[in-house]
Every structure is written in C-alpha cells, then in structure tokens.
Image 1 (cartoon, rainbow, N blue to C red):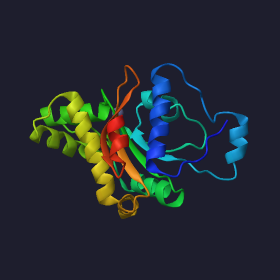
Image 2 (cartoon, helix red, strand yellow; image 1 turned 135 degrees about the vertical axis):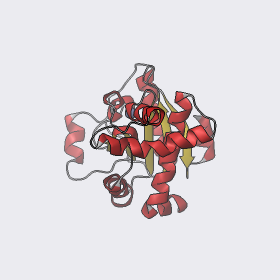
Image 3 (tube, helix red, strand yellow; image 1 turned 90 degrees about the vertical axis):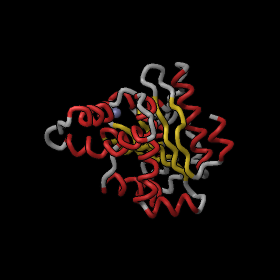
Image 4 (tube, rainbow, N blue to C red; image 1 turned 120 degrees about the vertical axis):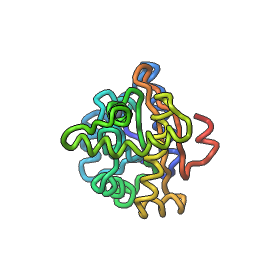
Length: 213
Ligand SMILES: [Zn+2]
C-alpha cells in the first residue's frame, strides 16, 4: 500500500492528523512499511512533510504519525533548537524535495525546556555543548515569562511558536515558499501520556484546516 504524494500543505497536514489519530486510538495501519514500498521509492524520495522535532526517544516520528518509508523528511535536535545544519536540512526538504509542509514538534516534559527553566532559576549553565542547547531554548522561556505564561504547557507552546517563527525569520527559502502558498509551517505540542498532538501555530495553512483540529 502506498499513498499518492500530496501537493498541498493542508493535504499533508490532514494526512499527519489522521495518522496521529490512528496512533492515539491504538488503530495504526503502518502504511508504507513493506518491501513493495521500499522498492518503489529506492530510486527517489518524495516525502510530504518535513518533521522537525525534539530528539526525545518517545517522539519517534513515523510511529506517532503512523507513517512509513519515504513519507517524512525528519530533522530532530534536543529541544528542537535551530542551527545552520537544521536550517539547511529543512531548506533541502522544502526546496529540493518540494515538501509542502514543515512541522515543528515539541512535547510536554521536554528535558531541554526543563533545563532552560532550571538554568534561569539557579543561574548555573550546563556543561559542554548541552549549554548550547539550553541557551537556544532560553529566549522562549523568557518570552513566556514576560507574557505571564508560567505553566509548563504554556512555556512549551511558546517555545514551539518561537521555533516556527525563528525558522521563517532565518530561512528566506522557507519564507518565500510560505508567502507563495507552496508551503506551510505548523507547530504541534505532543502529549507523551496519550500520544496526541495539538496545533499551537500555523503559518500559511488554510484557516479552516487549522481550526478544524
Ligand atoms: Zn524534548
């Protein structure tokens, strides 16, 4: 079984939402995971979404969205922090592979967000390059606090929205694709306990799709 590659941002988003719903209700179909699909896409990939999420082991992209080989172009860093390699990878997915959708995926109980909050509390910087991760999450935590959002879920949503805006600020390629209606960027907050993903940001997506979720 294989799906036809999607052409529009909203079609891609609906595929992801449907897959997540199957995962949440424990009714996965495991599409595109067989040998036929493997052979079919060996000559070339045409994924329908770039998934940029936290590296957390509980956030396995193809599992929580019930997808398979060749469906998602996945980029993950701790706390979904953004650097040059992340931007280049996302631009490759959008510009070279023509993915119509970029998803930023954060989650509750995120260690990187927690570490940034802790570093602000006690003023202690983590060791090594973990510090680099924490420093890139800190602006989101400060923005959430400035807006009076102090609950963990609110801080996470702020970090996901901040990441969505950061991608569009930093990547001209992505911003132009969104402005032209050829791509959308959405932010999702994932709940570890029930496996559901909530929309917290949408740029360039049809509003009726965004509100339907
Ligand atoms: Zn995380």
